[in-house]
Length: 219
Image (cartoon, rainbow, N blue to C red):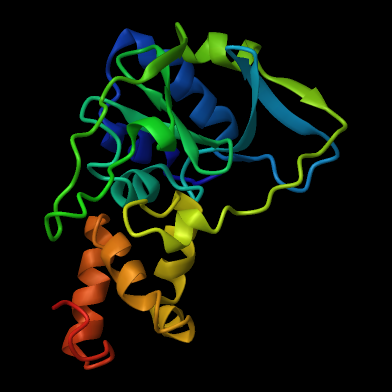
């Protein structure tokens, strides 16, 4: 638990009454990582089990940190929503004025318009409501002994119109140069997908300035 937890929370500017239960949770637990536990934890949503990965807080790990993850997903998550948990291997739960909403990558993410360079298709900004409050969301969590086996769908990485999931952005941020260990066929695709993240655009610009990007990669 960070010693300056109250100061960190104040930076989030969560002053609405509907945020109280979430703020109290941060003060008591901060981050909850559901990986490596004896049980799998999930919530039921319209008859589908959505596995919980991490309830975000303040952490040195980008994939667990509230501020870092929301910056990574800037513009991918519609304005007015704030990501508070990672679920279902690439999706998010978001606060929106008190209630909890489901950001589904397959529905709500940004997608590239293949006809326009650096252009995007119109985003679906309607997020489905999951719970009326953070407290109600916590009461929905159940567990099972059957741990899910997850294999990353290669289309999420190799199709140019689909953006990277948050956990992939975290890997690229740790070591941006590792992208050039991939097949030359996919490097331009990966570069374009990283352009979605404002933080990663800055890293790519620094790599370009240092002469580490192949010639013509942005052409």
